[in-house]
Image 1 (cartoon, rainbow, N blue to C red):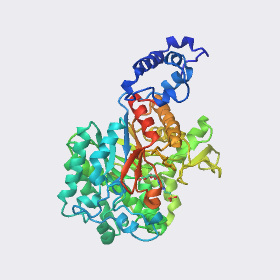
Image 2: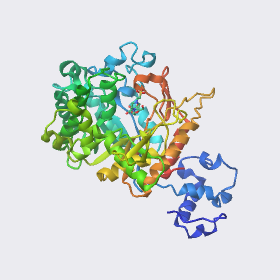
Image 3: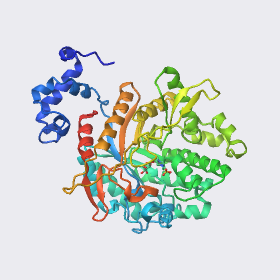
Image 4: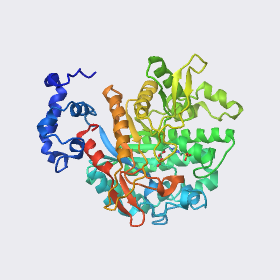
Length: 511
Ligand code: GBH
C-alpha cells in the first residue's frame, strides 16, 4: 500500500521512496541514464527546473513503480520472422517456406526468404539490443537449419550460426534465452508424418531439443520448448490461417493438440538428460487470460476458474497432468487418445513458465451457473492496435501472471512476449513517433509492476519485438518492433519507443 500523500508532498520526506527518487534526480545530470541532456520523460511534460521537479508529486508517484532487483529486461524474436538466409548453409525447408510461397496465404504474398537478414546482421542487431539496456534476448532456433530433414544427420553450419550468435550475445553482456520451436516445422516431417498429426513429430522434436541443449547449455541457461502451442495448432490445423494451412476434423484437432503437449513433455525430459546441470527449461504459451470485469473477490475467482478451463488443452494439462473434466466432456467422442504415462510426461516438472500476453481472452463476472463464470462480450468499439485481434487491456498482464501463480503455484514466470503493432509512419526526417506504443508499454508494464509488487514471481519481460519482422499471415506491413525496418535497404531505425524502453530498463521502473 502506498502511504497517503498531502498535496504539497511534505510528509514524503519520511517516505523511503523519496530518497530513491532523490538519488535518481541527483544522477540527473542524467549522464547515468545514458541520456545526455534532460531526458524526454522528465522534460517533455513540463518545463520546471530540477529543483521544482523534486517537489513534483507526479514524478514521485511514477518513481514508485519499481521492479524487483535483478528483473530482466529483454526483447524477443523468432527464427523464420527475422533470419532470412532461407537457402543458405544447408538449411532445410520448413512448413512456413511452403506456406508463404503459396499464393494468397500471406498479405502481399510476402515471405521470409530475406526477412530482416538477421542471419547476416546479427552482430549489428545485438548492438541494438545492447543499446536498449536490455540484458536478455529471446530468440528461436530454426529446426531445419539444425536437422534439414527434421531428424537424422545434423547440419554443422546451422549449429555454428547459433554458436556464433550466442557467443556474441554473451560478449555483450546479454543472456541468451533459446526457444526450440517457434512454428517452423521441417517440411520433411510434415510430408512424412503429417507433422503434428503424429506422435513421431513429438519424438523427433524431443531428439532435436536434447541435441541442441547439449550443444548450447554450456552457455545458454534457459530453454523454452514450444512457443504458443495454441497458435500453431489452432491456426495451423483448425482454421488454416497459418502453416501448414489445414482444417482438421474436431477429433484430429484434439489429437494434434495432444501431440503438441506431448512434444513439450518429451523435450523437457530430453533437455534434462542432455544439458549441463542447472539448465532451466519451461514452455512459452500464449495463455488465454480471463480478466475480471470489476475486481471483486467473486469476479477474480471466476476469472481464475475461466482461465483454467479455457487453457485446458494446453497450459492446464501441462501444469496439472490431466485433462480437465469439462474439456473431455465437451470433446465427447472426439476426445484425444492418450495414456496415463503420457500425462506424466506432459506434466514433467519445469523450472519456469513463459507467458505470451497481448490481449485479454475475455472479461468475466462471477455467476451462479454451472461454470461459475459469465463471459462479457467486448464492445464493438473496444480499442485495438493495428492488429484487429489485439484488443487492449493492460490489466491482462497482471491477471495473466496472477492466475498462473494462483492456479499452479509457479515459482518463476517470464513474460516471454508482449507487444504492440502501430502504423509507425516515418517522418521526412526519419522519426517514428510511436506514441501509441509508448502508451501501451506504460499501461501494460504498470500492471506487470503491480503483480511483482504483490510478490508474483515475474522474473523478466521480453518485448515483442526487437525489430519489425515477418508477421506471419500479415506479412511485413504489421509492425511490432522497437526498431523500424526499412525492408528495401534493411536499415533499422529506432522508433521513439526505443528511448522509452531504454530508460525503463535502466531505471528498472515504469516511467
Ligand atoms: C505472437 O502470437 C507470436 O508468438 C509472434 O510470433 C507474433 O509475431 C506476435 O505474437 C505478434 O502477432 O490473424 O486474426 O487469426 C500472439 C498470439 C495468435 C496473435 C494468433 C495473432 C492471429 C489472429 N497470436 N493471432 S488472426
